Length: 249
Image (tube, rainbow, N blue to C red; front, side):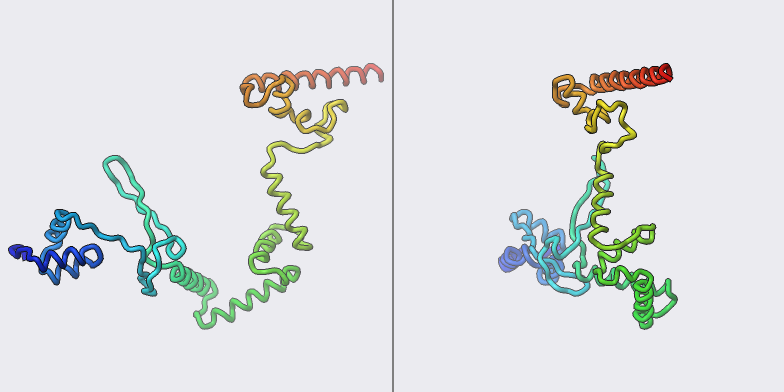
């Protein structure tokens, strides 16, 4: 194999088939080593054409190389400069991957219930039927909606209708995202302050407005000092009010 020379037929075969065919097939037909074929192709500047399709190892069907049909995977390798990450596609398509996950879930539930796969469906239907009896209010809902409602009902939520459930969920999300609380009577210092949020909580926007600038133009140190000054002013006003009430009594 090493002493064999390149003929015209071999070179023509290499030019036609090297970009598409596998090297193992070319080694058998040319009766040459892998390194020798690669060196000859690099000298002649022949490059491998990357195919836009990929075969699934399980179902053995051809799909286009996109994230619609295959999941993405990460591979990390150590180098001199550090760790590098390479991105590629998995060898199984999304349909086969979903089948594998479904089979794993069935096996895990069979271990929990101590039964075979044949008796698994009957037992699982009975469990679902008992759950519907426990929560008869959620029978008309779909699977995804029903799961989210039952999770909150297990934590102590009183479910009446799905429209009210949506409003409660949106309210909890909005309260979590809020930066400042809305008007509360307990947070008032004087009746003169009114029910504005910025005046009660002394927000950055209110303090910048009192100075006559925007929040971006004023540094944070000046805003904090001004906030402390206003808080002290309010505390002194409260003490004066208490002293006057005691004297009148």
